[in-house]
Amino acid sequence: MNVNVQQEDGRKKTFNEINITPLTDIFLVLLIIMMVIAPSFQTVDNNIKMPEINSGVAIEVKNATVSITKDGSFYVNEKKVIPDNLYESLNSLAGNLEKKEIVVRADKNTKSSEIMKVMKAAQDAGFEKLIVAGEPLGSKQQKELEKNEEKG
Image 1 (cartoon, one colour):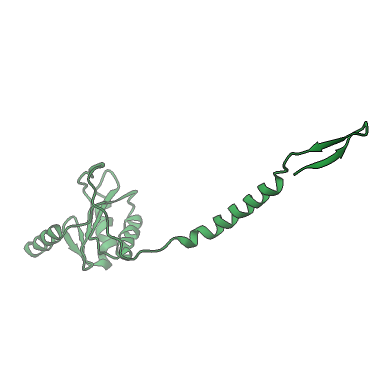
Image 2 (image 1 turned 135 degrees about the vertical axis):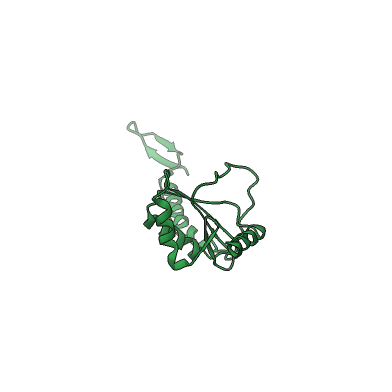
């Protein structure tokens, strides 16, 4: 863009610089539009499978462990518990523990609402830390829980 500018001594000088202010304004508007629209590009996948964990920190066996099987059965320290009695079971455990920590293990097909029940019951019972195990509760472990429940 060449613009002739009249100087004080009467000669014409060529001004050939680009004004980038309008260009910057356009980029800022495009950035704002993309920030508003970007969340709508995310899709929800209802068929989420939990990944297997090959490394990381091992979870210590705690005094309080809640296992949830694929059929929605709750086990507190390998003893079957009715969902309505989950709070009472956790509350009685919480009084005997030094560290108010609980580990939740669930089958990969367990509904998140079942895990939310455990979270609410643990919070109400006074647990301060809830650890969700990264690897799902395997079918072998579920069968062991059911066998232990039948024996005891």
